[in-house]
Length: 202
Image (cartoon, rainbow, N blue to C red; front, side, top):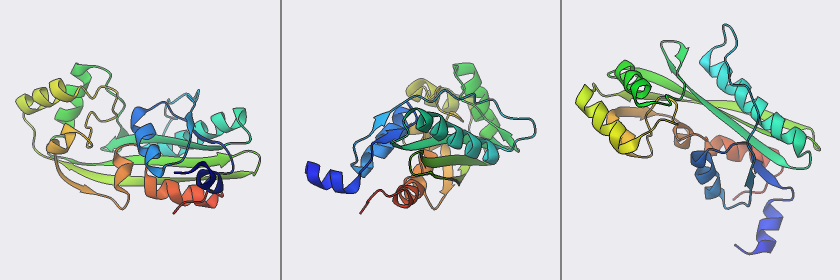
């Protein structure tokens, strides 16, 4: 895309307040130049906080933390919290924890809440939203779980299932009005927020 057309679409710097490669790859689909900045945010849930509220609070906190350091930029913050039986699931980190998570999710329906926030200090704009995706897992046996984990190694992925990769084979159904939310950034909702912030999109 010619530089002049990019300039027309984006009058302020755009920053993704995340170092997630999944979110970076998703945002690049919009063909806008952006940089990434790691937000320094404590992700510990508050007492009694629901997974949906946690995803919304953390997405706002990430956007605001980065926006405070870059007041002239438009900043995107996002966070995903899987919910099973009303409780949040974290990134497993290890093979053993990922195995246990997938055993818990086997044959179950659960929700993945993905929050997104767009903020700009200089314009005073801050809006946030949450997209919830319902996911139903197949009945999984230990051999299937082991093969999947050895092949995909999704230890940095909350809930241990990467639907954009081999994890799709673990599922029976996905219900969402914003399908990229399950990967980590709801692009339909993000576009809505960027337009509200003044970014020109097709």
